[in-house]
Length: 245
Image (cartoon, rainbow, N blue to C red; front, top):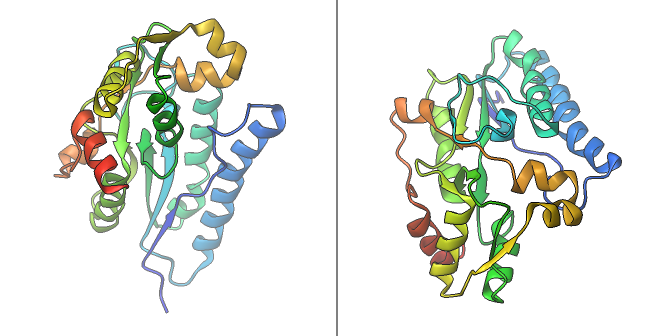
């Protein structure tokens, strides 16, 4: 039976555990090697699938302050940027075989079931909510339900190929995210974690995940007519908490 489309989202978690050299190798290899093997296998199928949707990340842009970033923006610097470039390049054998390849550059995916939000909920509910560093760094996010709809959208839209940013229309700063989550949970958030403390606690991960700034726009999704269910952070958080998604 012919395979029409393949969705590839596998990869070692970047947020669990300190970034030792062994951890960084697992992050890179789980994405790059796994994607290349899959792309090569799909290219050998007869007939091959019509579309491969492969995960990527806005980490490709690196830390860019308040610069507005679209799919046409060049890649940035840093470990995650390097991994994302190699990750997307690993889909090459599929594209060379005529398969339509879409690389979904995800922002921080919000879900009460896991990811970055779940541990934040525990901390904020205990009154431990805090901005990190200056709090001015931009955070591009998307809700898990919207991720599901995006995947369906790009599978069906034959005119979409290449990189696609998957982020809600409303980018927020770290301080804004902290304030909004605290408000939704009816908890205080007067604390602040200095940048040096974050680096002592998490090492390189702090600079790449907590102190990095990426103000990303989902230009290609917007141009293709996609409409986010969760476009504003406060309403997204309230909905996720009420539904347990």
